[in-house]
Amino acid sequence: MELFELYREISVKNEKKILLIVLDGIGDLPLKEDKTPLEAAKTPNLDILAREASLGLHDPVARGITPGSGPGHLALFGYDPLKYDVGRGVLSALGLGMDLMPEDVAARGNFATIDEQGNVLDRRAGRIPTELNKKLIGKLGTNIKEIDGVKIFLKTEAEHRFARVLRGEGLGGAVSDTDPQVTGKSPLVPTALNKGSEKTAEIVKNFIEKAGQILADEHPANFILLRGFDRLPLIPPVSEIFKLKAGAIASYPMYRGVAKLVGMEILGIEGEGEMLDEKVELLKTKFPEYDYIFFHIKKTDSYGEDGNFDAKVHHIEEFDNVLPEILSISPDVLVITGDHSTPVPLKNHSWHPVPVLLKSEFTRPDETTRFTEKEALKGSLGRFKGTELMPQLMAHALKFKKFGA
Ligand code: ZN
Image (cartoon, rainbow, N blue to C red; front, side, top):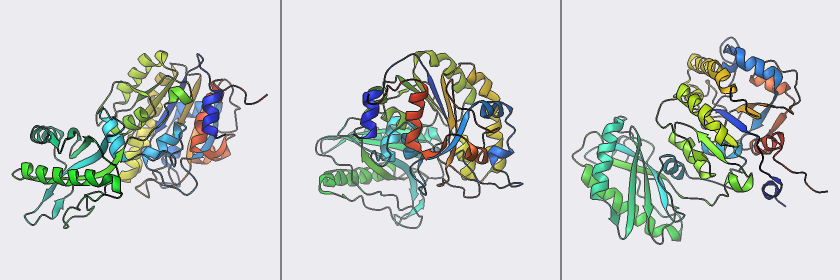
């Protein structure tokens, strides 16, 4: 039997409550005074917790693999990211609250600027304001509702970004990106990557031409680029595999999308900012109604990608500040970890294992005194694969029955 099938068989419902806090991209490398941001940050509340909890490290996908946030989160939710390979377009559309049917094809879009020769001048159209994005999406939506019987839905994400969903018969999700990824070149022609996606590629081509005509007089957003085409994968929900009523508190669309994909309810809060205080308030209100809540913090990753050591340190300290408020809800099982590392020196996601802190009535305390990469290495949880986190949470919540006689 596959492990995942075993989870389905041995999981039970009970009153115990699990809280998963994801500090996106938390893992890092030593930089200033040989310290990582977690080591440099003053975190009195996390320090107390680290002494009471078990620590360890997880490899989100596998050793040496640098994951995107999608696969990183799927792993934390207990789903094998290699088995459930989800396109970013699907995550964006779901995160924006667009309804996706099993046959729909989603993609991410950018407003862009092209010159008179049709070459891309700016792939992000100068990061136009979200308000202008909404106006242009309205204009496109009014003028292009359907192509060859396939319905088209568009929704603004933020700045230059939007999501696009195609709904109709005979569509496939295997279409190549039109974003050339560089300036000075013309947008790429959408191409079917398999036979079942030929109709989709034709419609996408047609859609882009029409959109180009409608936007021709706009500036700087006079064109669109599409990427990340995909269909909704069939994923059994957490309610079925883990018998959990699960909720997600995340402000950024992609994380809401990945949570929704595994059947979590998306709880309030939406927008570009971190909104930490609002999220904590929401958590306090909603926690009693759920068995499991996923609580996402984004900026630790953003500052890592910006290469901003001090800002990452500061954000960790801000999180430490609200930690007592969070702990006031007394989760039976508490985890603090990340979906991958985003080291400041790399300004990107990385393959480095991610610190994990796990606390429940049944954790074995270890010698760890702080929630840092180095301390995590000494922790009693050892080093494990990202997908092995969820079964440990289930066990600590006494939500797994014994396997075999
Ligand atoms: Zn991430």
